[in-house]
Length: 102
Image 1 (tube, rainbow, N blue to C red):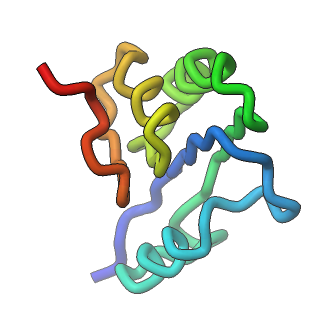
Image 2: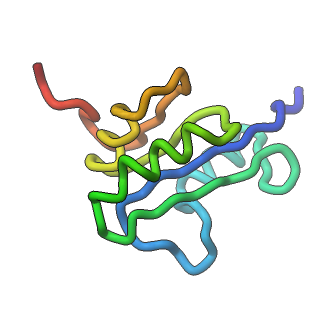
């Protein structure tokens, strides 16, 4: 069965990669699940360029797009994504606890 087509945004606090793509590990994991860029998945990236104060604005921007989920690997970016009001699923591969305890 072919996976349905999705738009997968990626939010990062780090610098924008030269290829504007999400991390290789994410792309490989999704490829193993049958998602192929240009066929049934489109990646939409936002990078804070090491300016964490930009993360809430970038998270809100992603929420405003027609996307299926938000993927973010870093603690500050994950926190910004959880604070953006959205019904979207949030994915934090390797982020540990995305919300502060309590």
